[in-house]
Image (cartoon, rainbow, N blue to C red; front, side, top):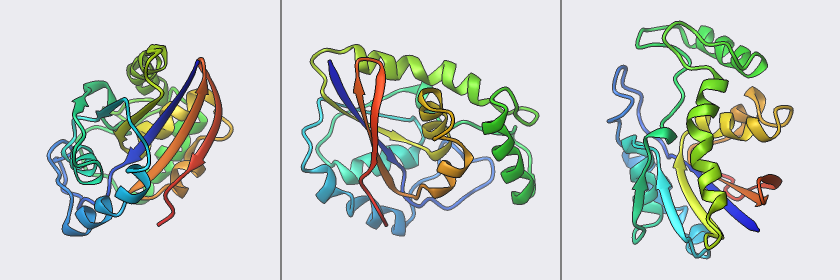
Length: 188
C-alpha cells in the first residue's frame, strides 16, 4: 500500500503576538499561495486536511481553490513556549534544543514528543485509508518537522526546519507505515 502525503506549509503571515490561530495571510502570502497552483494542480488529491489556523487554511484555499478542506485540530502548530514574549534568539536556541531532546520545551510549550503523540494519529489514519493515494495537509513548519522527525530523527530536526520556506511543499512517500522518500517540490 502506497500513500503520498503533501505537506503544504503556509505562506507569509505577519506575526502578531497572541494571535496564532487568527493570523491571516498577508497580500504577499496570498500571492505566494497562488503561485503553488501550477505544482499542486498536477496532482489529484483524494483528501485535503488543514491545521485550524487561518494562515494554513487560507494557503490551501488559494493554492487549491476547489478543494474541500477537512480541518483537524491535531494538526495545529507546535508552540515551543507559552503565551509570553521571548527574544527571538532565545526562542531559536530553545527550538534547536527541542529537536535534540524531544522531551524539552519552555514553560507552557509543547515538546516534540507531545506534538508527535498529538499529530501522528492523523498521519497514521491517512496511511490506513486504502483508497487514498494522494493527500494534502496544510501545515506549519514546526509541527511538520516534528511529524517527520518521528520517521527519521537524524534527517528531520532543527537544521531541516531552518531550510524550509513559507510557503513550501514537501512530498512524503510511504509504503505502508514506512517513509520511503521525501522530496521538496517548491523552491522559492
